[in-house]
Image (cartoon, rainbow, N blue to C red):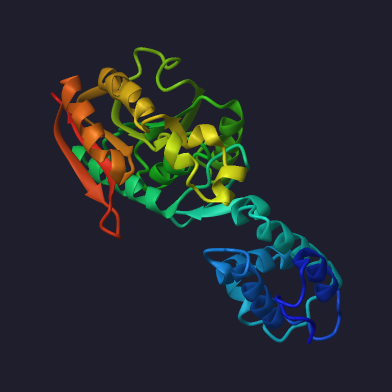
Length: 312
């Protein structure tokens, strides 16, 4: 059956020799063995990681693995899967290994040039869609700005589920915009999403006005950055996460710019960490252009989105 994950002081070397054995390396055995192996290497979701990586190596869907437990993996699959597992054990995110991440029931291409979309950011999409429903009938066209679009996940999810709206996807990184463009084309949203390279709204034409401005901006402080997992610090783009010493520096810049771009009664929706929520609400109040400042919680009860309506 091969050696167990704890029988070698050089797991990456034993990984290669163990998985090169041809006898009995079935899909089920690979998943069981790899789950244990990744658990020993601090994966938060070892079974899920194993399934996603093996499905990609086999060129199938995750669900297909369950009907193939007794199938023996061929040499090509074992070789590709072994390399995936080696890199995952060193901390590389699964999303970067396979090149995609699921978000809001859609699949998005991701690279190390963009932040990996998180489940908690889906709450921001929900809030945008709710605000659009409040503002008019389905026949009413609305304009949305997604500031700091990254992979384009928020912009595309909104456009997919609010077919009457158009979205401007803004990012300061040209490489991120390349990823967002490929995702917009993949989901057939390129005709409804405008991509623009800009630091917040600095390069956006002054005449562009929006019904909703949404943003998942960098909101990690310098001190918090040092406490993040090695997987995040070593692989994800620091500029997409760290705002500065306090964590709300970029949000403070965004608030007055958003106020200038929002139509009367339009909404500003910002993803935040619970640690800076009160400061963000205070900054919105100080700006003087907003009313009805509220907060929305995620499924764990933590505050995740601050929302504020522009004065009409």
